[in-house]
Length: 178
Image (cartoon, rainbow, N blue to C red; front, top):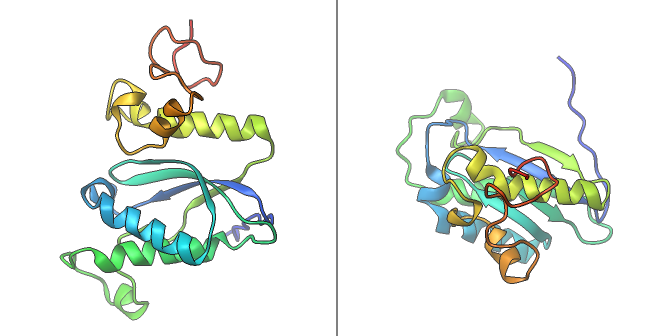
């Protein structure tokens, strides 16, 4: 088995995909406030910029920018996952292995990380994050998904409210372009 190597850039920006172990569950939206609290708690102790996020029922995507001199995103993810998992009702049976490791088995152990290289890479991942609920057929329009920073960027004038809709030009390859 090949050993996976993560990339670490102090003060870098990263795109992440984090997924539940059981993809049929809807825990992330059913317990959205617990997830928000986990993010807030960890950000208070270990600051990072949450540039973009979309929370879907069984996975989430986000972009973080870490403080100068800091590249410790694994610690932050471990703490966010643990804080979320600890507050969920304990109704799932766990294997002896998970019990021995102190795991609830809520999350996949690994997550996807991509170091963002430049502004174009950052924007492409930003668009991917915001278009994801449409891609997974949770909604027909990006603006209809409530668990996304898309709304913050609409208010700031970065995206038009109808971005990603049929006929609205975009060069990101995710929305439908004319």
